[in-house]
Image 1 (cartoon, rainbow, N blue to C red):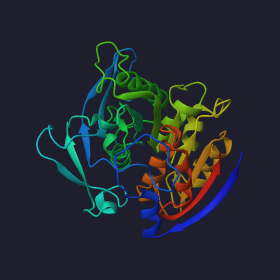
Image 2 (cartoon, helix red, strand yellow; image 1 turned 90 degrees about the vertical axis):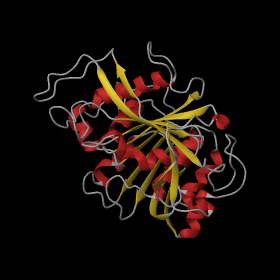
Image 3 (cartoon, rainbow, N blue to C red; image 1 turned 180 degrees about the horizontal axis):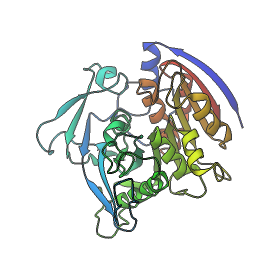
Image 4 (cartoon, rainbow, N blue to C red; image 1 turned 135 degrees about the horizontal axis):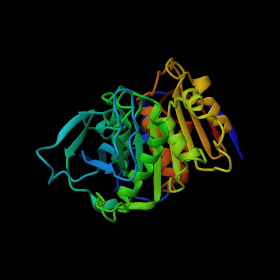
Length: 345
């Protein structure tokens, strides 16, 4: 096991090094440089399906009596084709480094609603990206869009009871069921749920599945990937951003985490996070986890940092552990901005 702690200060040149422009098409081969492999897809598709799990209930919540099923409105981001969607292309703001600015264009990303899937790089890895307390799938857009642009299919659900418009009020008590929702969505995209056609039949790589989340969604991710009681073994890499470790262990206890689990783990947090402070919420699960693991402390950033460093780290991490691009581990030595990175590989 190698342990390293690196403080990284990089300006724009470092950002270009980490993200790399280059020529060629997106690929699934290994990279031997400190740049993300392949050229980003120029168009990202976005669709808004709702999936209903009829096998599991939604618990009661305050004045809400509950329901016999679990309803999950989702945003799905994916490599798309520029033609064939609903209406014209839309340019949305994107963070520097994951937009077209590093290829000489404007700082925006082209998104096409209900675009046909660009099958040139299929099958694609699948990421389930979970939102935080009191928000929705839309809160994950910065991270999810960046992953889609680099060749991932990302499904971001809005959970029934922790969302901003939850019946009975937003609640953390549904956290264990949210881990089950992650597994259900994997089933959906693998075409394993009766009555629900796979959104992209044959285009999801069943052995390249990851999970990520922000805040309470990061806690959901840790449950689904690093707690033996809720573990989904199909998930091959896990990337929680600013997990609520204190809340989740107070709610569910601390037993069962990490024992015998070696799923690769990336934790991202901000040193100035006053919602889930880094020393109590990011550092402890990193310390307890088995290698391989990486911890990124973005100096001066607050809760769930939406930064070029975060998006670069997420893409590089999943590239390494889902696509096999081991050379991209070096990107963590060159993240943009001011970061402290710990690694045990």
